Length: 222
Length: 222
Image (cartoon, each protein chain N blue to C red):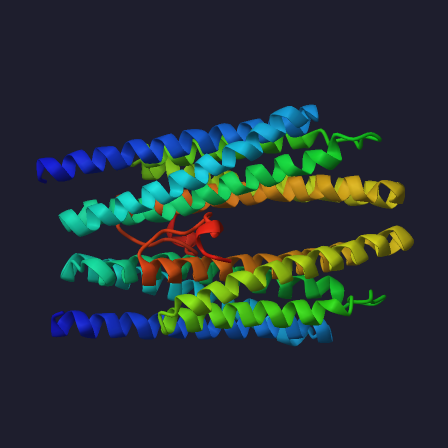
């Protein structure tokens, strides 16, 4: 590999890690804002999303620059295309965190609705999935990526159980349906964040093993 | 451009068009199944999603093959990376159409809930957005892509109005909340399909004009 390409790949890696760090923090803060009904923290998440959007553009520009200038092959080419796809997942995760934060404008207003106990566990697991999928990417660790995909079943189970609780509460207190709908939506956003962490993990497995495994979990041993 | 590259680009274009055709049909059928409470048609959409998933993998493999073998530059490179990104949006649209179809298992059962009048217009507009964004891609037509992005505001307005109706109905008939939640979810899926058509349009503008415009609609003149 040429020195120039090495340098550009390192620059790309730094950009992705910067974006990943912001996205991870954004999910953490959105989940915390939800638990604590913290509107100020929620507003920070919403404002921070612009920077994540800009970084997605930067990462993609950099990928195309490297493809055009250095015409990488084999594993380097796979790395660039993985980064291209992972950057879109990171951007969506940022959007979804921002979507959770937006729900606080309703959820923070009294009368408050109870946030089901299990939401904290679901948020922890989701944040863990995002973090682990990014670690798996940094370390090119397919085994770690597979463990993230396994976690998604637990988050799906959390999601189902919590949504059942929220719907039951809607039936009991129809006058609080608006607020409960915002809670419902925030939970669904968490679940979609976990889905994107799964996508990232699939891309990592592709990066390491060179086989597109998306939609083929039977090939993953998960 | 070499003859081999020309041939491979044509093959890629055919694959994308095949995928796009299936996705478009899938959205149309899902919307029709929703209107007609047609479980059989819904099941077809759900079954068809596997083929769309397989095609996403085929398209991405083909993109990487072209990048590795022919090392395209300039507009050809942009085309490949656009196709890579567009294939992920198409796959998500297929997933969302399948998600609408899954809601029929609840929505088709009596007692039926009323599907708000405006849902048909929203579905028509959404299908139009998907179709137009793909036509814009095929014809490398940035102006057409911009007109799709403008349509998204109308779909958002439809979405807001319909969801307000559904929530009002939940308050009136709390015993039908389960069914109304399925309707709510189907409408939200439609809205997300329109968002992905917007993403595709942004990628088309990038392909034609060479500037990443995602998240920068102020630069789009829309």
